[in-house]
Length: 560
Image (cartoon, rainbow, N blue to C red; front, side, top):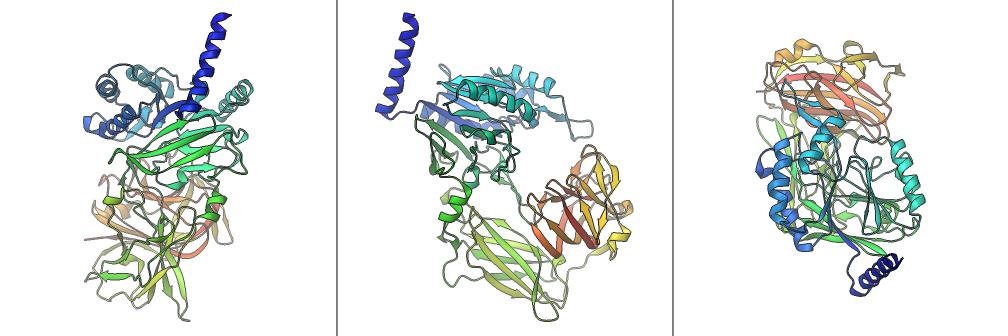
């Protein structure tokens, strides 16, 4: 009995001390998506984060998954035997790891990847890394319940564990570590098992978004917050495949009795890269500061300085046109630029034909930003003799748009030559379009329903097939694929990619498609064949929800 009283007194003293001294009850280092390989250089970002964690004297380090890029045993051993001990030779902070999809992938005989069973792969990860927690686990850290779920844990299992934990700790903040955002973060909806529990702080990885992206924290029914990423990121942009960018963000989370201070760091400087997020405790949905509606209403739109103009240049013979513009430096912070292209119709009105979005440089430290942006448009977007209008609009993190800038363009007649390989002016009759049954690598097919001239996309994987001979005629060279589409869909929207199903390989990165009704849009993809001469691509419309589309025109060209 005396020992119990002594423990209670000590815990109370610790609680009072933290309030008096201003020190947090616990300080956690957070990283995610490190994607280590067998090359020791792949650990450099992790090492930079560990250096900060040591300086900050964290109590624990939580890794939110995709530890290694594939199931690389040598990588796990190198971290455990060399990297971690070099920073924490004694009295190391506790570690928790989330088990995720990349750690159960390995190379297959064709040079692609195959997925091992979670049981087999995660047992290897746990052994080689010396991980203390199992894929699904519960820990108490400094008095707080912490639930760990693997990426493959069923929602029913999560719900049962959450219910039990809330019953046991009804007045405590509960930390849930899980690799993926709950559902379409930052637009989490009631399909998430976490939405029933306002006391949940759900920390995730997976989407590779920088912590400087203000959408990386969300509050609604509960709190969703990213652990950042120490690999690279692309994101999804309407109309184009984003280029790969270095991701340098990680976090230190300070937990106090009445708040959480979530500090965002850059490995480039080793310092905080943006103001911290402060989360009041206990959670109150009405006053939560990171509700999207609240931030939309209180964040100004970004704007260009006065007299900002678009600069337009093109090569001859014509193969592409380039737009250049300076950063929108006034008002709120820029997240993206919407770059719309319109074609003038016979009546003089301009009609939208495509949009190629671009991220701002928000993800970079200030001294690394160029302050200007360039976007190229292939000549494949344009018809000779027509007049076009470009419009660039700065957009903030929460969708608030500033005043656009515009420039008109008439493409030159001297167009760089290409070789026409395939063309269909009646693709709804001439091309095979099918829903793919089973795994995404499968080519089992089910016909799509057509209603009022539109294919009905049920959500899932739909492929548009060109004749196999067309891809053989490309003969391993550079090619341009053009498709004119009418689409009607709501968020979440599909992404499109030219994909060879077996072996599974993409010719381009995924292109996000727009919401709403978009009639007469054109998509142009210029690519090099990935594994010539074996690839036979089809256009894969994947992810997203149900919607409908109509194909008006398809063309495949070989480029010089």
